[in-house]
Image 1 (cartoon, one colour):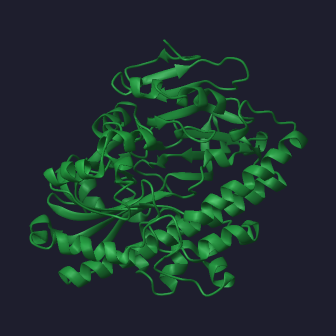
Image 2: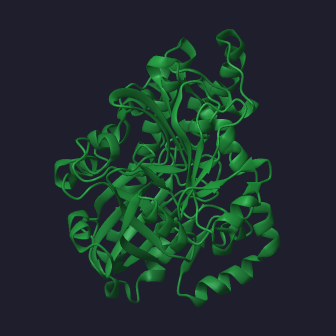
Image 3: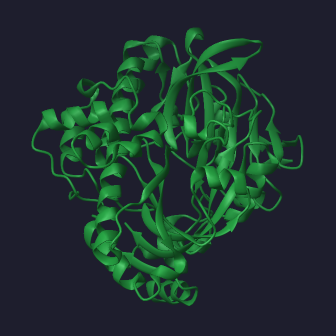
Length: 478
């Protein structure tokens, strides 16, 4: 099968291979079903998968998750690992502009029926305490740059240390709420200025806070380990590092474009600007990226506290427990067995979620037997899922991060009017609070792939299996 200029060879029911051609150093591997393939053929995402396969030091394959769609340099839904000791590169395009954009799931000690008669009031309270929009405004306005630097180093752990959360929050955060290796000095003054007034804010676009109900338990043992039960109430948060992370990406793309000729690196797309991980520019970007990731974790921690305050005000309960917090735009230095030996790899996940299997040593003790929750939101008005990682995952313990767009934001605005979308969501019982009604159609359910199919392909491909299904009750959109 040829899609545009890219050849796809079927290797199984949901596994397709892009054979090595030209400058490709490894093949592409794309996890798609026949139902999902036509949507991917509409853009140039498969060509981007092939371009990523040309990066110096890449190992295994250039992987694409079932929610793949066109991105900056890398497609969204991409996973690529490079061998650090063999000159492997790091690319800001492999992380994206919203560094450490991720998902956090909270479980409330409530049954769905306890929201009867209170849901509208709860959504009003949440909309009042959750800052939204693309500009400044956050739960926590920092005093000075020194305070910001401490947050860039300490992430969610620093927020908790200052009383903005509970110590137990950190045990269910990826990396304990803070990645090591942050370098606040590698974050530009402009990036810091953008971040100073955005700590604890949702942002805009596809970011959201969603009140949900557990409507199906698929794996009872794993669900019990995660603290999720049928009929329970959850809150899902999706946001990232705001303007600070965006500026970090912008700054370091320019640095790497200047550095590539000196390093003798050529790429087929300037959006794939990259340098060796173990180079001055690579180490500086990695330090800035980690700092931005810690900002993103602190951001979600602050929004957690604001959510608890709203629940307390309306329902008299603020004891929402963190199920898990995981990033889906991140590069991490990880050890993986490859070709019979352990290698240090820089795993770049862009629109892809880490999904550790049961028994993995990096899991917190209370999740060691069950595996890591992988949080996969659907689109506004459709189901979301909690998955768990599977052993033998060939894509470096990665899975899909969501439904994935099937329509551009501009096309979605042309297709739906705000009033029509309001009526559609109201008809299925979803209460919506939005920062901008005019932009709400960008996030219409029809603008996204079928989440059921994305989850089914993830399981068939051996990436992750579903544990529970959640349905939306109320949404705060940026």
